[in-house]
Amino acid sequence: MKDNFSKQALEYSKYRPHYPDEMIDYLIAFVKNKSKALDIATGNGQIAHKLSTVFEKVYGIDISQNQLDNAIQASNLVYQLESAEKTSFDNQTFDLITVAQAIHWFDFDLFYKEIYRILKPDGIFAVLGYGLFSTNAESDVILRNYYYNIVGEYWDKERKYLDENYTTIPFPFDEITIDSFENRFIWSFEELMGYLETWSATQHYILKNKSNPLELIREELNISWQNNDKKVTFPLLFRIGKLK
Image 1 (tube, rainbow, N blue to C red):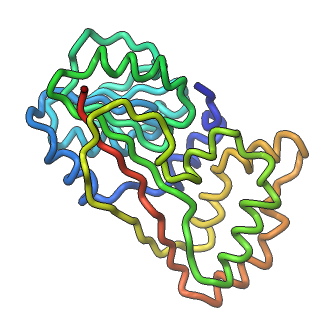
Image 2 (cartoon, rainbow, N blue to C red):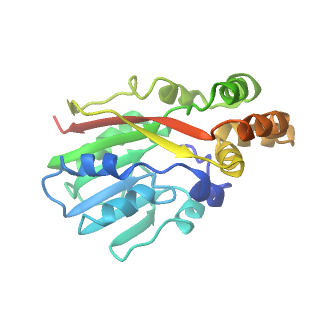
C-alpha cells in the first residue's frame, strides 16, 4: 500500500469531507452483532469514531503514524499502526470491516485474503469512498481543468478506480443491493483550497516541481467562488458484501 498522506495528515483531518450519518447508520443496520468493528486505512478516524458510538469495541489501523496521531479519540476505540494486507488480529474477529477512500491503494489479492481470515462468517464488509465533487458551473470549469490537465499526470494509476466509482474493483463477496448517497456542503474558499491541497496529485506536483500548482488557479477560482453559492456535492461510493 502506498502512503500518500502522512505528510499532510493534519490538513487531511481538517479538510477531508466526512461521511453523512445516514450513510453510516444505513451500513450498521446490516450488521447483526455489534461487538467488534475494524476500520482499515482509518486515516483521521472519522469512520472508526462513528462506529465507536454503536460497537462495543472498534479498531482503526493505518500505515501512517502521522495520520493516527491526528485521529479522533474515544474510550472504546483503539488505533494501531498496521498494514491492510497483513494484520495482527485473530481469525474471525470482526462483525464489520470498513475501508473508506483507500481500497484502490491495496494489493487486492492479499487484502481480500486477509478480510476472509478476520471477518466473522456472518460479518459485513463495506467499501466507502467519494468521487470528484461538483459545484457551480463556473468553478467546475476551473476545477476540472486543474484535475485533468494541471495535475492530471500526477495522479497515481490507482486513481482510476475512484474515477470509475469503485465499480471496477475486484469484489469477491456476495454483494448486497443498496441505496445510493451523496454529500453536500457549503465551503469557504479556505476549505475548498485546503481540500485541494490534500490531493495526492497536488502533493506529487509540489514534490517534483518545487511549486504549488494551486497558485495557477487561486486568483481565478477565488473570484469565481465568491461570485457563486459555494455549494459542493460529492457522489458517495458504496459497496457492501458478505463472505461467500
